[in-house]
Image (cartoon, rainbow, N blue to C red; front, top):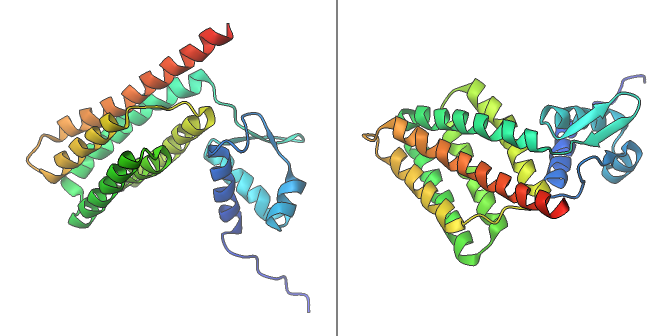
Length: 226
């Protein structure tokens, strides 16, 4: 019989997800090569799904594929950060504004639960859990915007932003302040009579403040290295 066996659906995407997590957690540093033979052996897969995973990682901005040389983890530059945050701030602010009138009671309940998770992580000083909940909080109101182009664009931008945070292992933000901002965001969404532009400005300021903290940290590192 000469029928080709069907390949497992989504295998490449599953591998891409695993590699994304490893890159975000700093297991692969910027500039490191992802060696095909080693990863094929590790995942127990052929070249085809691995290359599919590499293409997905490239779309997410996590790797650079160099013809005839290989696939390399994309190094983060100061310009990457300066380019990413203001655009993401503007677009997430827009998403929050759109979500203001479109968000469902079910989505509001999800936000309440996630905010409670943030509160618990804050009490435990568990930064990792806090930011996982923080990430989910933003995903919910972005999805609630109902604008597919905006949702997809922000998915890519937010992946890169999260990558920046894990790559540098820098972020020691005031978790109490961050929690308070997210409480205010939820309060604005719960009270439909509030000005949606006020909500938009609140989200934009929240993200741009993170940029300022990030750049201040980088400036400290650069001064130590000079």
